[in-house]
Image (cartoon, rainbow, N blue to C red):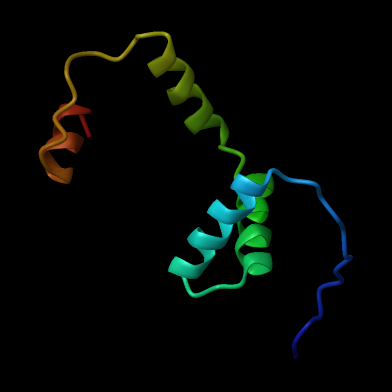
Amino acid sequence: MDIAIQKKSQSFRLPVELIERLKKMARKQNRSLNNFVECALLDLAYSEPNTETKAAINEAKAGKLQGPLDVSSVEAMYKSMGL
């Protein structure tokens, strides 16, 4: 059984250059501008990092990372992270 999500129409005033850029990005993904913007806003509104991720971000910003990070491969990166 499908559940319909209620939607409401809303107008926004955005710079012309931004609208054109968003249209290009939507076209590249074969999506409508409305769908592209809706998905981008959903990602922004519902992608709050969890506590562990926030702690890692704060650690990295504070320069508390230990040693260089090897990003030559996923396996090397995990190894250099001590995982």
